[in-house]
Length: 357
Image (cartoon, rainbow, N blue to C red; front, side, top):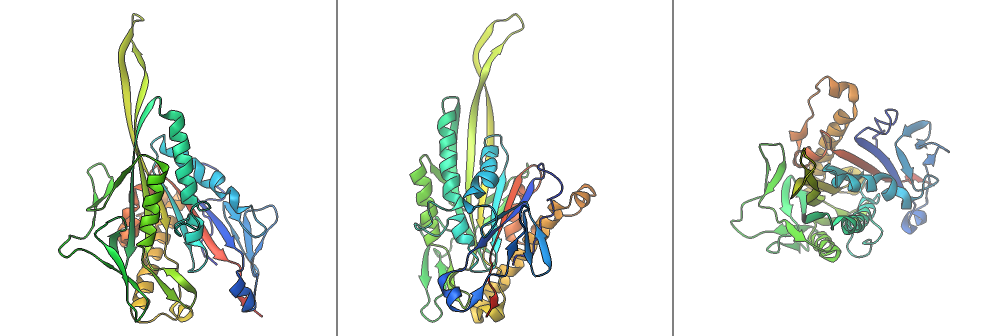
């Protein structure tokens, strides 16, 4: 169970941070092991109960909660719409290893391409562009990176490949010798950039989907006792939307129409984040390099949790509470898309098992 109760459930719809949970059903292997459901959804409320403990969120999906198919329209579609008004946004999948984060986000290669949130975002984005292209000029850019052991790696870099070590099955990124590492930098107006990262200009849905597939294939994965193909890195698929709007013709004070058109430039980015799963070394059976990966994963998730908690506490935010963005590269990279007037949606994924017969 993800221990992150929604901090904004009672503050209304205007809160910029929303939290939901997605309950994964038991799979075949878990049923064979004698596992059974241990989570119940409170009828008529976005609330789950485990034993005597209740946790309230903005939304609950799966199990006896709302259908998973409604997650995009209710939670993510408004963020896509906000891009066209210039609002940055972030969608995060957070949860224990093996709880369905990659499936929920849709970064699992071709098999989940049509069902995950990222493919739905891409479809919605291009449908919206089609309705506005007669009055707005668009430029779309895509980047795909992973943060593996606190190192930023470019998943769209054609000069980097994944290789597996037969001794432990761990995929390691091999980069061109002498190539400088990717650096996280902040511009004078507070925009976070990645120096040295590949940013692909895309014009069609297929081009954007190809970037997703290519990057997913390069992502670091490994086997643990809890997940045969565990994501060992935080993956961030970023869509940047630049638009030049053509506004109404200028009208002079004497009523004459000026032939020149006034233009407005807007730029917004959407981070779609498939986090590595939180884990306990005892349960995953991790040791050696795999154990060190788990340490880095949990450190990044702890830093993210601290940032979300600081942003979700309206009282502390008004008092000028320090938000610890610099505690990890993950939170530092997402800084301009988590705070301020940006919008954040966190989907906590978990399975309802863990009680064995």
